[in-house]
Length: 159
Image (cartoon, rainbow, N blue to C red):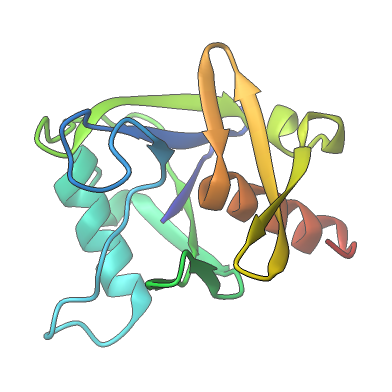
């Protein structure tokens, strides 16, 4: 779930993963996870995971659409679901999964001057890795890539 909070000045909600998780410990991410066998689509999984990880009720989220699937490493295919979140919520992060939750101004994230790109060689391919540092938070990798992908969709530019 890419949660965009509908404040007078839009924000985007991120989580910092718990430090003792087996994978991606301490990294900034969006709420999300695997589809459960009973779930029929990525929206169901995104809404469930958002509730489980940070306590955000599905009733306060309007699904706006999807971004193109992205590959995270060699093991995961992620379908980013974009949701508009109504303000007035109280977050209840699950301490097993989430160390912190924070918001970043949407305008900051949609400013290409803040999209720091670097090339990394993975196997035999060069891959662009993005980083968007914000007030001590390091938003990078797949999470930053999804933010940049949203920027390209909204500005109708190539990335």
